Length: 108
Ligand code: SF4
Image 1 (cartoon, protein in one colour):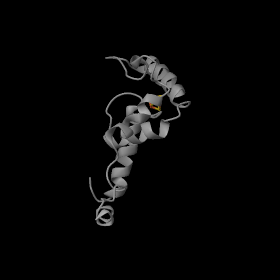
Image 2: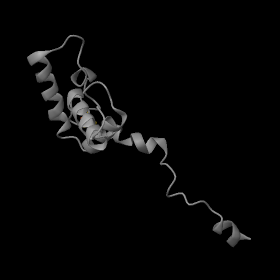
Image 3: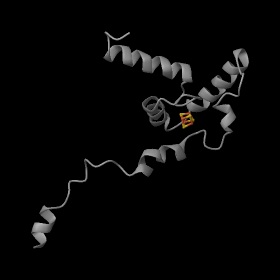
Image 4: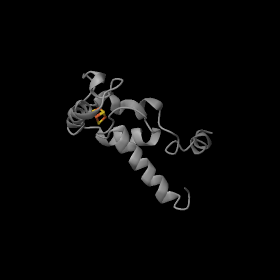
């Protein structure tokens, strides 16, 4: 009876990971104790001020132990705002657009 039960157990390796595992990286981000304003632009911010803030945020990202997970999340979920994984929103949009053109070369 026990053998039958063990043999009937589900194969769990293909199941999705618990949701908390998908977000655990956020607790390890180098930005976790920094102000969000450093990573998200205020209304109307442009030009040198914006570039300076983005470069400061990117410098933090460059030291971050979870940069790859953060970047993968931002690209997969198409995060529309802010610095994620060392990329600005425009840089992510370019990567996403390029990937879309490569996978759909005949689309407009
Ligand atoms: S890569 Fe940048 S935005 Fe992402 S968790 Fe690390 S410091 Fe924060």
